[in-house]
Length: 278
Length: 234
Image 1: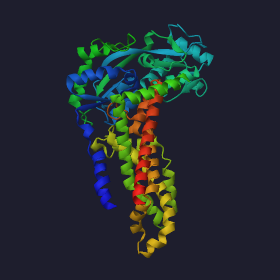
Image 2: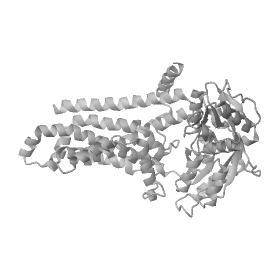
Image 3: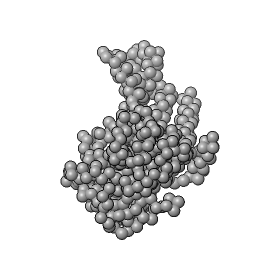
Image 4: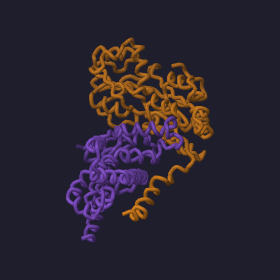
């Protein structure tokens, strides 16, 4: 019995656990959002960066709130997210920074083709939300402290409506990523705020379509920050900074601009321009 | 219906095409779950055997506890291991979070109680049968543990397969501690969750069918080995 352990199982165990044959390449960990990962942007731009730099980028895709928390705990080297207020708090608290703006895309409101709240084509997002609330039409909220969730809550505030009053009835918080939330909206014939990138790459649309787009309030800015290496000494500051510098460089910005789905550009680089006030 | 049909077509396509990305995900799944199984077996089997033979105050409580721990929610295990392995946690200096090693640890924690509880159940029956015999050779409970494990090896195979099945099928723990990083910590279950998120339900289901095929293959292999071994032994 014991000799069997020695000869068979123990070496197997060491081979499996003790030999981290995978971890030897040069790499950084980036905490980012589901919208950048699931839209396919990272799949497009990261190989270009890795080819140029020899640095592999490992992306953990979470909601913006969670991604910032991963940075706070020191479990990532770089944070790449989209909630300016939360990002500025992260920097002010000394967890990382400076914050640099990288690119933007926009949010859209999608809903069932039947459009029971009659919002299609409205140029005013606030008015659209007021109509949804008045019609008590089902609305799916991310409810997960993500950047999209924060943007949605700001939009309700601008509309002068507290959606919490409809909680559990027409206002439904799913506490999940963009994709699962879109799945729910499609299944329930509900309205939802989505980032355009995820919407474009989303396959299970059923009869959901874009009803509101183009309002300046639907602007969605992405920012990037290096996690503070003084607070977390193991942070790969040089390689992380190299990734950030590349994102902001002409090459990185061009790589972002060249990502398209069905000919449609998903993200618009704006690192070389002053950041718009949203 | 159309989605289901296209899921099966996609699944066969995935298997037949030997797509390198899918193969890498399959290999990592097997590697993580089998490593977790080995780790868990080293702790769970002796622990279960000991519980089967030892009589001590509070034994009933310990058995109830191991039985209850079989129902550990994977996501809770994931969170626990996350907090332990995080750079801000007690084991942070090892830098294991978001690595396959972290996933192995999480799955091992998840299935150790399953192996221990089922082993205890299986071996208790055997122990009742030949406790007398072993005692007449002067073997105490401690000495009986290896003997019981060896004699019960064919029964314990099913226990191991139950543990492997649970490890290979869970998504909550590996998602939290592995981070579903493409090409590094993405396994079958997290890939399925990701494709579901992207609304590509046929591809998600196809990956699920591939996962089932793998689990089936592992089970068939284990049964085959057991059959051969039984013939040799008999």
